[in-house]
Image (cartoon, rainbow, N blue to C red; front, side):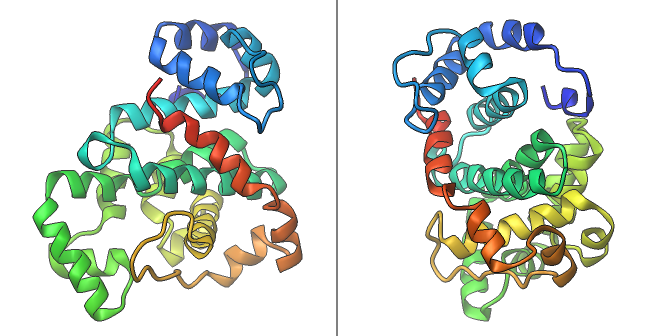
Length: 253
């Protein structure tokens, strides 16, 4: 599904067949389709119904989110704050990116997975990551800065390496690895988009994190996706409801 993000032609029958092979994925998607956000509680009984309601692009984005959260669960095997924050960033990126005429599926996936390296570091090196958290609070700095000081590398680098290994589309690789890199933010629209979406989600305190710092937002990226604070408020007026709806993907059937 991730590799299909670059494709222009939507094959809804192929997507339907792919989803139908996974009963857990099917159950999660039907739960979301029947949520209050879509206003069809109890009336969506099949993936075909969900396709009609949500559309090919929307359903594919949700399927990607559900699949990744199952394949890479958070701490203790539970999705927890990591995937909730990723979903929030995905929703914000999709809203802002659609207004800027970017591919909404790529926007959602890029926001969803922007912190992938952080999850992998936490699972592989829990003790060292605890030291990273202490260092970040003590020095009042950004997460990736603390990681580089303690570990010698950061989650953006780790996430990019994994995305390349898994043969993610180039836009996702750039967004995952470059959303805090000023050069790539200036050059790549998806890196710039995730840079803004990440900051917005942290500012909204979607997943409360002790002493979390809101990143300084690149002025060029901000102007590209947010014409004014009023525009941002308009675009995100129902963002909480969208996030709550999408969060159904993280719950076991």
